[in-house]
Image 1 (cartoon, rainbow, N blue to C red):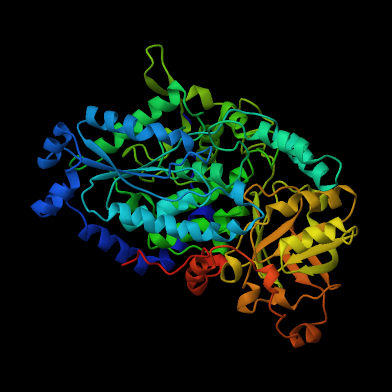
Image 2: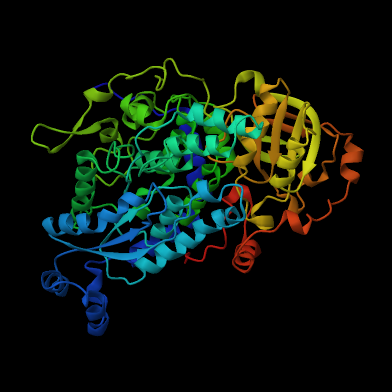
Length: 613
């Protein structure tokens, strides 16, 4: 086994900087964890309270929970059978109960959390509740765990806001050992490249709705996570590199013997974590080192831009303060090691077959780009066990092998740190007189990373679509979509703008998007400066842009500027408010709750920390 390289100086400095700025908040958080300790927790309850907790159990489980030694495991599930990624979880509670019993414990479903699908709501009013749903999920997780009867937790969740919400909620009960249990990606269907081509043809009017629906149905066709590398699959990467999954568990397909065996192993492992002197609780696993590892993984794999919102929010729930400068400094030293759609043609199944997360983690360990001395759900070995790939031996038992990840199974999909796809990470922070934003450059060809063109300003994505269909954007253009921030309309994703803007780019025009909103975690080939902060509703400078102003987006230099005379720029007042038809979302009464307390993009666009203490 090769000896890991010394920790990279920049990684070390960023980690130390985070720890120093977070010292007081983190100490207060850990003190709260310490005061919440003690096992088994259910025996702090009164007799009536405890009787309520096991009233619905079978006789054997009831007897176990009356006793003082067998652990109680709470399951928090995001199951519904409308989301393909979460449909496999239907079988999990029964499987987990049997596995936990076999390991000497009792498992109960503590609660369910909502799980909306951005793929269904994309481009429609429901998207305005998407980011809000993360905080609802965090609260629902807290409600599930508030019964104070559990000794360990299994979190079942996959997709966009769901894993971050589960994380934030679980960290409020950070004294409990917690494992995240994935369900895996659906088998490969129509290639992501062919799907994107069908979308562009539809945007041009060259194919009809039936042809487009046929292509989409062949792409999204089975239980499991969508196979592109968007927010859902980036969530799985994050849980693995932070040590909250079993090694190599992220991208094993649903309803397979290996997937079920990994689920059984996770259930048994959480029981073992409740034993005396064992099991690091989630609040101690998620420290500044694990969070830096998560950012490094995000950069090395070209993951979702949404995690520039989610990781700071997760960190805050653990008493740690992260900011975009931490992302920017790490991006300068972390190479891009993965080419998964939209950063390449391969899907996550091919990525996993080529070595996947175990190979990437091994490369980062050997290059000194991650902390190896972190705590994980395994309790020993730090990050080192996560460079091994799981499989079944001849007897059908779970085994991890290092040899499966000693070299890339496909150098066009996963690369070494010695010969990376790019010297720097897949995300970049942009700054200038338009504010600060982020861009995913790993999917953008080098010749498209600098755009200087006149602006066209919109207050809704529907208005952009209408202008495209009318031929008004057939030129070099920087499309500005304002009033899309968390305080304005919940910061919906604007992924439906990718096909029309991609059509313009393919025609040879210089095209970019600048917005205080979000794009999908699978943002593609068009350069997009997103999450621009401060948002327009809060007086951000993006609101000063007028039609015809020349804007310059330079992803290589990290700048985002309006090339307008300084005096003229400063003299401009606030823009008019968006028209009512540009802010027509659903659930307005619900959204008002979020809008009233929404933070900015750089602090995670989070609501007030209702779970804090």
